[in-house]
Image 1 (cartoon, helix red, strand yellow):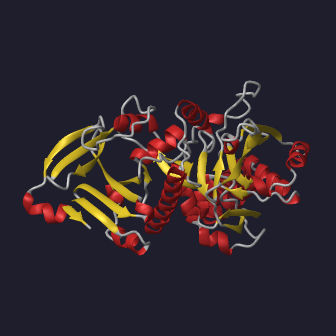
Image 2: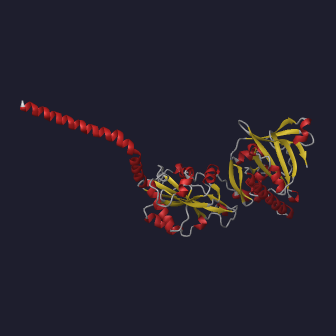
Image 3: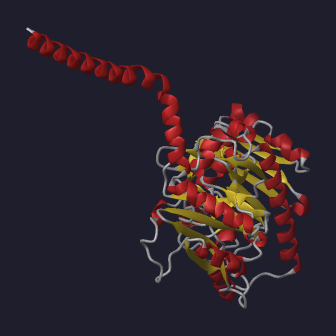
Length: 461
């Protein structure tokens, strides 16, 4: 009896202990974990975040640039987008006070920074120190396009990109150079033969697939994940610029060949016209920028830029294109306020709108509005005497930046297709006699305006 009682008691004790242990496990899993899970996860994530490869690489890079007084600023679109969504949080947080890595710890292979080259005082010294700190760096150089128009200086190389790798993360340092129109330009990241294509996945870089042009950003210093960094003061504007930043260089080599075959007109009249046309173009650009209206070089002005890197002296006008969806109702008033009276207005917003303004020295500004169809674009023309309508067809195109008349302006990215549509395959040959109603190969009749609408669609001043 005594033996049985002892066995029963031992079994009960074992069962009770097991039940208590199971209860503890259940309570911890379903109550304590639920109550403290967020805090534990946050603490664990914070620790992993600040120890992550990308954060350590960024911290080391910022330490390096700060110690060498290299004024880099953050341009990485993925990080800037996160910062912009939490801008008030970022502005209000102080250095070192954050407990969670929210921005630089987001998994990615690169972080992109930029610097303005004219502010970089010790390039070679910086490069050596970076390698001493454990970075493996590539320097990508190419010839300076700003010197292509000067035979004796063309071919001079400048740094365009640095790619510095630390462990599995890389810093892409985009080198911005100043251009004539008070804007910043970066070059194409073109890998030369000796460069290891497997050094980093170059195709995933946000910058360098093509040259780019940006407005000079005003910068602000903020604390991001415990690190002091400079960012564009208006990150939204900078982010909007990135997908539309592609830059096309003037073709100086082809322009020199053109002038060897067709002598440049350097008469007083030609030089006076070019000066007046340049001033008119600059005034038009300022006026449209204030309105927030995109425009591009069109017709003869676009041809002059592409063929000879200059204004065609016998064209007698400045031609611009604007997408009709960018039309603003106060555009005429804005030009008049700028000192450019309206010379004529043809068409209407819904169909074949064209504006012409009178500049000084009898140089006029023609603005053609473009309409988009499913497979092409077009702008219209109107003959004032007869009311006949004309349509000029263009293949679809996108817009790029270039430098012309000492400023940053847009041109069609698909430039040759655009020019050939307007001037045919023989666009390289100067033609001084031009009938806008029949000479362009892309022109076609488009009916006639009803007489009842003439007062609206044909306005001469």
